[in-house]
Amino acid sequence: MSLFGTNGVRGTANEELTAEMALDLGRVIATLKPGKIAVACDTRISSQMLKSAVVAGIMSAGSDAVDLGIAPTPALQFYCKRNRIPGVVVTASHNPREYNGIKFVQENGAEFFREMDEESERIYLSKKFRVAKWNEIGKLLSDECVEGYVNAIVEGVSLDRKYRVVVDCGNGASCFTSPEILRRLDCEVYSINSHPDGRFPVRNPEPVEKELGLLKKAVVDFKADFGVAHDGDADRAVFVDEKGNFVPEDAMLALMAKYYVEKNKGGIVVTPVSSSRCVEDVVREAGGEIVYTAVGSPVVAKVMLEKKAVFGGEGNGGLIFPEHLLARDGGMSIAKVLQLIEETGKKLSELVAEIPRYYTIKGKVECRNREKLLSALKKEFPEANHIDGARIDFEDGWLLIRPSGTEPIARIYAEGKTRQRAEELYNEGLRILKRILE
Ligand code: MG
Image 1 (cartoon, protein in one colour):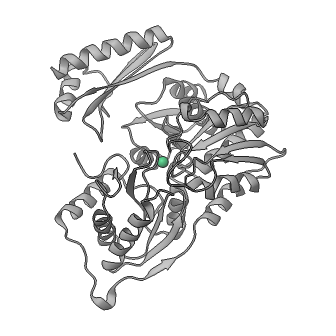
Image 2 (cartoon, protein in one colour):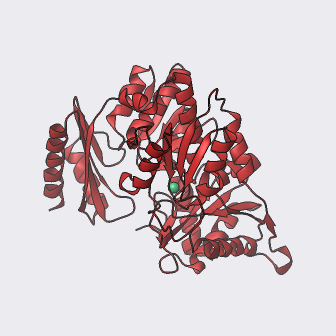
Image 3 (tube, helix red, strand yellow):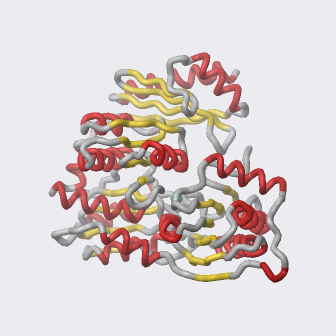
């Protein structure tokens, strides 16, 4: 298994992901991209330790490190884009509290693309780092990235009425940005879990529906227009409507895709093959075009850049607004949802009800031979989309079988217009997968 997964290097802090590794990863990026490098981290207990090691690695290779402190991933990315410098973020995003991760960012603000991660890995393994002479060691600079990020988000939004919003920061990096974004937009803000705490005492960093009971209740009690929750590094945002119902992430992706295509009178929307058909349905109906990619936000961003897409994102709350930043952005997602409600004059539940409904079933099976599975899938389904495993589309649903990029498992996704159809497709997929793996 490679060092760099779908989103950089991840592992349990101080066991799998050590200070020594962080030091070498700092050396790697400074070897690849000499000059100033921005560094930020999330609120995890291990983050400051790992960030310090990354900083030492950068300086030892003769580059200056710009310490941005604790900040959401998109805030660091926006700083990188604005200052045309690369960056490093120390975060395990949505993973449980004992994990951490290190991710590299390009000068344009996008995450490193796959081939850049591969080159980083080659340097990491060969240990051919730049080493500065004693008098050429880099400097430690410090700056902040939150204010510029918040300003850029609120600048583009104009609201005529006052909105009530509940925000669940999950004790992560969004504590420093999302409540502030909402206040600056003159909303009445009710924030929960909004102090930074790397123990994540109330909920897991991943904002899945079962973790959001408190948010749902607060939205109803506070009579809010909606609620929003982030993952640990706030590149993702998920929503609860004014009735306290969780908004499926795919439905939010479709809503935003529709909004962008309508606004641009067409255009390309990019999303992974694992996304719900509801996205394709609304994009087509609005006169746009859908382009599917492999799973993972860096490849979505890369294809968005190549195709000059108007919008893109993943069905996990990761939405990409390319005019602002070529990366998932939880803070901007809040601003865009407010804008959408303002412009349509509809409640969030009404907007979600306009999105076609599909039923999805996901599962996984142990699979230790990725290459074998991929070639077997090509033989089994010659007509399928093979950009990431095999996606087979039918009139009333689809099936996707793909090996995971980070774990020794194969994933099955099935979606249908009815639950029964989704189950049929899922069982068919499971049967074929088991036969292939035997
Ligand atoms: Mg994240």
